[in-house]
View 1: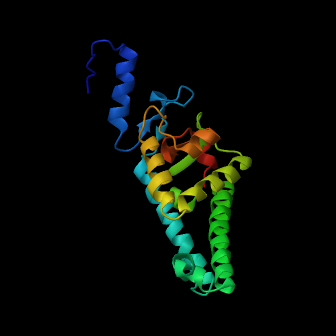
View 2: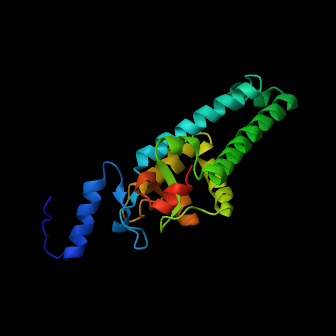
Amino acid sequence: MKPILHKGHTVSECMADEAVTVYQGGGTLAQAVLSSAPEGMLIAPVWKRVAAYMLDVVLLTLVLHLLTGQQMMYYLTDYSLFGEGPRYVLAVILNWVIFFSGHYLYFKYTGRTVGRSFAQRGFRIAIVHDNGTLLEDHHWGPRAFGKLIYLLPIVGPLWFGLRDVIRGQSKEAEYRTRIDSKNHTVAAVDWSLPSDTRLRLR
């Protein structure tokens, strides 16, 4: 596709805009927004990130539900239990603690062991530094904790989730969520990463 120069734009600006447009279907060319990104690295589309997160949450919640004798979803969703006495209130709180703790530990330790969650692996997403290198272990705890905000009832998906979906599609935000910005990370398409990084991914 031959780039068309627009009035008031430099050649490099037009080439950057062209790159973002061309690769949008399967990922955005990282060098268009990140100067330190390696050549050819693509930023994963936000819809894949959302789908991977939802798949992780659904499957992990199902596992936790089974491990708690199929009682967890009852205690997480029936708010009338708060009026049933201290024993039920304690049970609700305990199940929420198990729910959040399970997700925190899952995202933290899958990150440390395979460099991403299992659903992200299925969607060919890798969480890396701007320069395409893998994260050190100390990054995964804060990232896992930050993801818990999306699990909050109502405001989690409808406020924090939508906010980060918008950021994940914004060139001005460098296609990063708030978690990415705080931890100086980016979600990349795994096969577009440098060979050294790909070989260390699991």
